[in-house]
Image 1 (cartoon, rainbow, N blue to C red):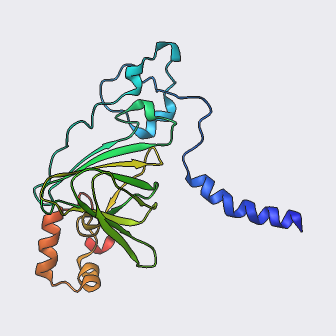
Image 2 (image 1 turned 180 degrees about the horizontal axis):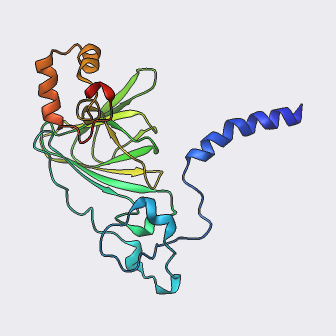
Image 3 (image 1 turned 120 degrees about the horizontal axis):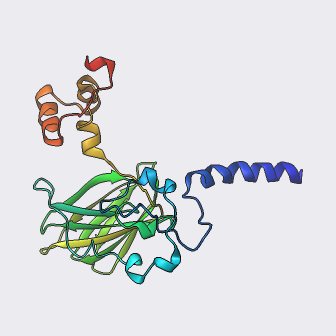
Length: 229
């Protein structure tokens, strides 16, 4: 009976362990990419050897790329700077990444999206932000966050942020994965090339309404559906 219970426990734990970032086997591993001056490709990081600790300095563990906002979207008033080991190699093997999000005053919005591989904690550095997420049962958890307050968005839960103050807002997000991924709901639904008939029926849209949304979120780069031929 004890062996049976142990097998049940392992069956419950192994899937979760398989989806998490691997545990580090050393203090850190700053990848040696041969002196490349451009961002590293995440998929190639495991192939790079670690730089010798003797050749590392404090500067290798510091990053200044989030001191200022990124480029703002004219449509949403949102600017994002995502930082993974690709931009900040010292994060490699540490199982974390982070991002800076800026929202223009009075209505700047980070549209609904989710991170398939990470839970996010969001700290409001400036402004007032209405933030929340929707769980798998369709229940929404949302509130206005003031400067200094933090909210957590569980992994793979759709979430959003909107500036409800009179001044620009800044949010600092951290993720428990080196590569959290992001799926932006509007762009994924209306900009990926899903067959128009599917979207019209699913969302009750007229062909003209659908064309307007597809135009806003960009034409698909490729079409993989046989129904689009």
